[in-house]
Image 1: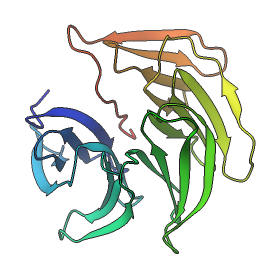
Image 2 (image 1 turned 90 degrees about the horizontal axis):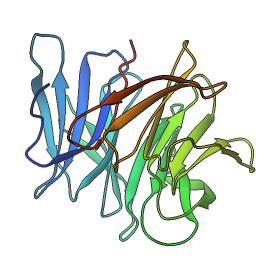
Image 3 (image 1 turned 180 degrees about the vertical axis):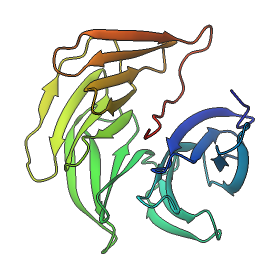
Image 4 (image 1 turned 135 degrees about the horizontal axis):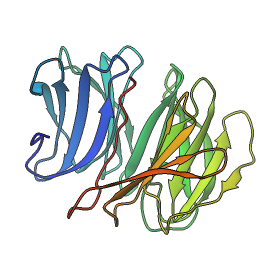
Length: 232
């Protein structure tokens, strides 16, 4: 346990190598930070100031760059080692609630907000354009979890889970056992699914095939504001 930010921590992501942790906050100003986890205590190794509240962070496959989305609708690509930054998305009044990489060339952006049929945008990073709008959720996307080794993913929002395939236009609704799901992650090869909600202090670990409960992790008295799984 360590204090990462002054404001509420709203985004967490481990690097693929497991040696670094990225965090983002909701504060004035809001910052994104990268932490080294190699020693007995976490050490801050990089920091960038975001334009608005940080909603989500995502490492590239080599861990050298970080994408982060903010409440004002911007997504930036940040080389946290040399400090260079590139604006990928700038859409006012369309919060970039979730950012996830799908392979090396595509970026998924789950849009937030309080309007009907909130889309998941599929960005082509080579052209800087949106290839697809995946519609089905209402009232904002809470999280996106990739199915390892595929172009399939699960999105969480408006108390539903939806299963998507980049190569297919249809979707499949998944049953939800908790009243609300804000975040979801998969653990392989165990075949577990981990879910949590911002209104609860419990993180649920279940088997993906039959939904059986493995364990419930409770954080008294605070509610959950972000989760991340280390790759090891």
